[in-house]
Structures are given as C-alpha cells and as structure tokens.
Image 1 (cartoon, rainbow, N blue to C red):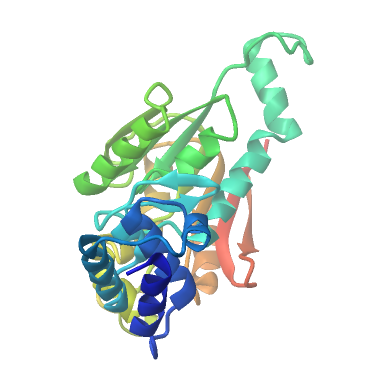
Image 2 (cartoon, one colour):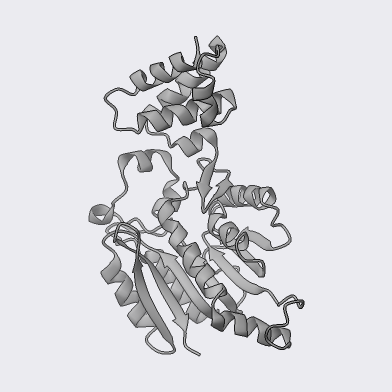
Length: 309
C-alpha cells in the first residue's frame, strides 16, 4: 500500500463526517510517518508498512470520535510557535492571540519604552544599555502559550505563570524548557492570586475558564468530551453561573491583595459582554480606563484595562 492509497483510504474513512477530511488526513498520516505534509504528495508512490497503516487508522478513529488533532499529535501552533499539548490543558485557540497582540502593542509603545528608560536611569536613545525587564503575570497559564508568545517577541520581560492545576503546570514547564525560558519564567501553583505576592506587574494576562452553566453553557459536545472540564468551567463555577465567576474573584483579589498593574488583558466568551461591562464598571471606575475588543469574527473577545497615569 502506498502513501496515496492511504490518503484515499483516510478520506473515505471520513466520508459523511463534519471534518476537514483533506487536512486532517494529511496531518495524521504525516504524523504517523514522521514526515512533513508536503512529503506526502511528492512521495505518493512510496510504500507504507502495514504497522504504520494500523497506527494511521487508529488515529483516524480517534479523530472521528471527536479527539482534537492536537491531542493526537501532541502539538499545536500558537502565534507561530509550536507547543506541546495533551488532555491536561486546553488546546490553544487563535482567538487568544488577541491577548498577545495587545500585550506586545503595550510593551513596544512609547509610554512603556519611556518607563523602561526611566527605570534604567539612562538618557533616552542610548541603545547599548540593556533596559530593565518588564514584569508580567499569567493567571491560569495552561500550556504557557500566552507567556511564551510574548517573551519570544519582546526581549525584556520576566514572567510569573500560575495555575490551579498541577497537571497543567507540568505541561507549562515542558513548554518552558522547550522554548528555553527557564531563566525568564517562574511557573508555580496558585489558585488565582492565592500564592502571588502583592506587588506591581506591568502586565497581567488571563484566559480563565469562562464557560457558564445551564443556558450559559456554550461548549460543543466534542469540546466537553475531550478537553479538561476544570479548564472550561472552573472548579468554582456554580449551577446557573454566567461563566464570569472566576474573573470576578480574580479582580477582587487584585484589589484586596493590592496587586498593582499597568495593563490587564483577559479573554471571555460569547454572550458575556454585558456581564463583563458590569464587572469592569464596578471595579475600575476610577484611575483606570477599559475597553472591549472584538475578535476577527466580530465577537467581543477580550477586555483591556489600563491604569491612568
């Protein structure tokens, strides 16, 4: 049996299923054979061993049953970077890249540049002097994808990345090592800010579990079946919850623990914009300015809070 035969068999296997059969089949066969997708078409007449076919068919069945490809291949691209993922963490979504965009815009902006120059105590424009690092806190870090994407695109950042899940922290540490960020990122357990000292961070980011319960539950059956419920709903979410429980608790802790920040960026879900606005109006009515930003589909997706100086 050749590569082309297996590609055909895979597409036939997916007949009638609501999947991107061409892309899924190519990714899974390339993963099975340990080659790039481009190799498949250029070596279509190459023979494949029976054992590889058996593995390929097993992967096809897992995918047909709703298992995300990222959990099969244990890799997911986010912001142009590869991350190890498995069932202990959510699969990073493209929408979350909006958080990274917002943080990078802030860090490279004129206001932050002036602040770092001021901290360094040098004249503006003295390029040979390495500026002090900006500080960042990632609450509910999961696979460490947000923090890694920021640090790989801005040199002067050190970060604390926390999560309530010890399993997720293991994955985060794997990605920290893979991306060679051990010097720049502290990864540790914290139930929101329970183990975070009250101090100032230039940036706080968070993509907490925000799917609500009952009528507020917008997760698809495949997502519920495959991805960790604690990362979807949050262990503190109650029946009838709108999904914003953890964000309310996080913001309350920021205030109570006197955790100062210059920028706060968080992701939320479909249908939650009114609740988010109420929350922000309650806690950030003075000394801050905030706004809601849409994703590429025009859906309100992140809220951005900036300290007024």
